[in-house]
Image 1: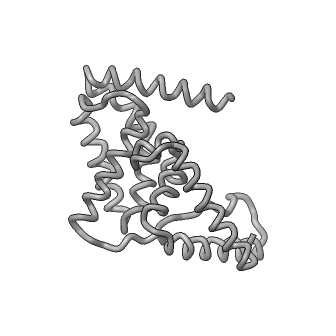
Image 2: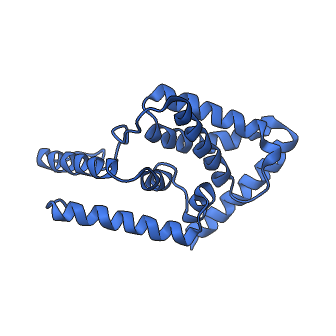
Length: 189
């Protein structure tokens, strides 16, 4: 319940900032600072290099600022990720490279000391997960990226991809269940 209050407060703050930024673009900076890292990591997982992710992130925020009058309400995070989704699609339409999930760093290792055998197990699990995720259809990979890298809610993801929040929740649950079952089948749990 506390998380919902925090999310509600954050969304209300985002809306206040958006309204102020419509009148004065210099007031957009708090949104840039709040969402930069999430947008950048989402881009990094969808493209082939840090430089491409940086360029896309820059173009996403530039486009957001230049089209701020087109914002019609709702989740600011979903609005920004919808712009990101479209920019990445445009990036691939113009270049046609293969999407690779190798860039996705799965934060499976704690920063504190871990026994060497635990490092090996974690590395093996990470490699298996990367392989399994690479085999998913692009749409399923994107759902995972929006959830994990973007940190978006099911409602926000729904806005980005044009599906209901319920459909997003069901699909994420199915994907994670299949990944978990495959890891267990391989003796990695």
